[in-house]
Amino acid sequence: MKAVIQRVNYASVKVEGETVGEIGKGYLILFGAAEGDTQADADRLASKISGLRIFSDENDKINLSLSDVGGDILCVSQFTLLADCRKGNRPSFIGAMPPDEADRLYVYFCERCEELCACKVGRGVFGADMKVSLENDGPFTIVLECREGKIV
Picture 1 (tube, rainbow, N blue to C red):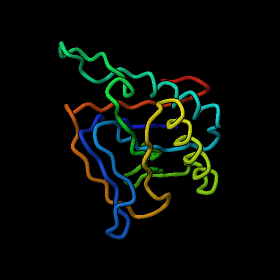
Picture 2 (picture 1 turned 135 degrees about the horizontal axis):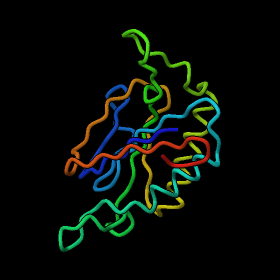
Picture 3 (picture 1 turned 30 degrees about the vertical axis):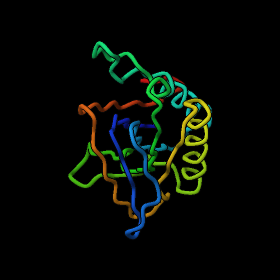
Picture 4 (picture 1 turned 90 degrees about the vertical axis):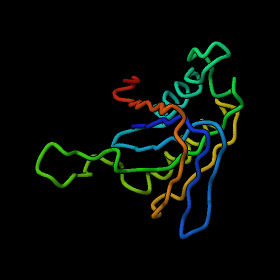
C-alpha cells in the first residue's frame, strides 16, 4: 500500500468536467493498494498520516499536524503507484490489487482518515478518468508505504 501525501493550499478533483471533491488547506493523498494489502495496513497508514507534523508553526518550524491547522484531506485512488518499471519501458501493474478489492480498501482508508484525522475527507471516483488540480504548499511531498505490517 502506498500513499503520496502532498501538503496543499487547495486541491480538487473533477470527473467529466464536474468537481467531485475539493479541499482548502490540507493533504492531497494519492492512494494505491497492492495485492495482499489489508485493513490493518490501511489502519497503520491512516494512523501515521494523522500524526504527521508537516505544517509550519509560528516560528516557521515544521511542527504542526493536520488537525493543528484545521486542514482537510482529498484522497484520490491511483493504482499507477504500484507500477513495476524494472523490465522494459512499459510499466506492469500486476502487483496492484484487483479493482473490487482495491475500491473497498480505498473507501475503508478514507473512512479511517476521516475518523483519525477528525476532518473532512473528499474523494475522487474510483476507476474514473480524473483531473486533479492543486497548489502544492512548499512544495512538500512525502511518500509512505506499508509493507509487511510496517510503515517504510
